[in-house]
Length: 191
Length: 66
Image (cartoon, rainbow over all chains, first blue to last red):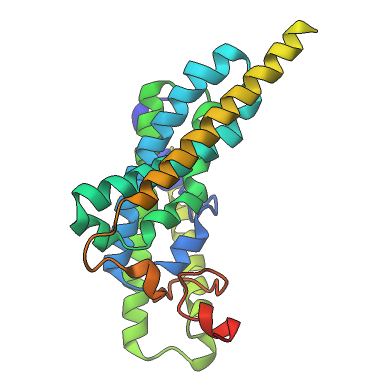
């Protein structure tokens, strides 16, 4: 698969939220304000990129040579959790302003299933190092795009005051998600 | 048979290493103090999701009756 095809496929055609239904919790939970959505999206890109690199290194450097491929899932969970701890520690110590702006979203990324899914899929699809880098950046960029679009729509809907009482909150959010999913299905013929 | 034993020992060693790495990272993270004005985890002001059992959630203490 070509690199451009991989980027388009990972970002739009097989969008991680709207087509594969991963990361729904932060998608619905942290999309009330655009600023928060942007912060979470950027933090997710950072963590996904480095954790997929670490997972790739661990798998090809330790697990595969020792014949311990069955440990992939447990190992990746521990690697991701440890990496988030180190990132949090680094930000607290050296970039407190960024730590403050990310707030609680940073530790919550540990439980984001997108991070684990990308690490596992890169191994499962036998991607090279370059493909793993491109794939992790594309998928997380797709997550960021959808999150920002969704948060902007939600802000406009909330401020319009035209939503019936029964549809307010999660109900209208899920309807918007369904419409966005149908819109993203339009990319199906692209690749 | 010795190959199986070696594989089991390697599995235990790899897992122990990764768990140790996590424990070390967790303890080191705990030791680093939060910067001024970043006490969001203590304040329990988060309302981003509906998980009231999370200690960060605004209604966490109210549901426990504290």
